[in-house]
Image (cartoon, rainbow over all chains, first blue to last red; front, side, top):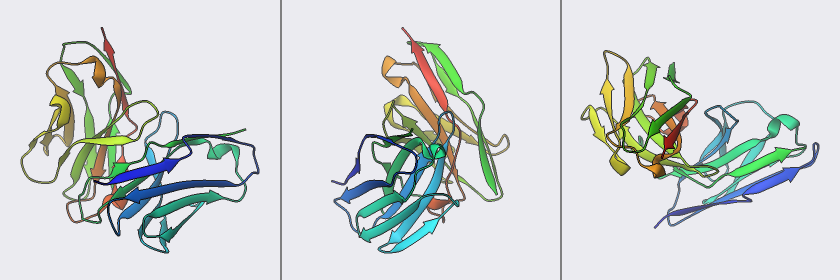
Length: 113
Length: 116
């Protein structure tokens, strides 16, 4: 069966520090991968998605970047965090078929102080 | 363009009573619609989806939703609430059956509280 791992679960970082959140998927190959951010009281905002190794699409301009160094690994990064980067970050995958269910990781609660 | 509006940010019901979570959508296409549930500090889980087949969709945990094109609605219901239903619920619209998850638009969520 397929599983998705996302870590860390919680993170407190000072303003200006770097960020690296990692997401890996097991039990499938060539998945579509997604990074979402969920701010308090708001819906999910798609940040990045990837349909293959090295292929990254960004939905909104921001202080963050994403990379997909391996087929089932998706990394969210920042060189210098801002206070506004605080939020709940969710990684998700789907099998690459249209109208397929998206499977979400457990999320990372990021607090920038 | 597409959008989704969840009409209630917070709904409270007593255990054993019916649940109604309201969702209206706007889309220039023939959309696909989803309901996802999120328990505290957890990822989202799919409850049900509508993809242009039967307008009454049954999901997991006794939930169902009806697609009403004339009303542009996709309300989520359950006949009898259980304590374990307490969570955040998201209505989601996709551009249509030929588009992937990168074209999803999420509602702002409805927090469901169950009163013992």
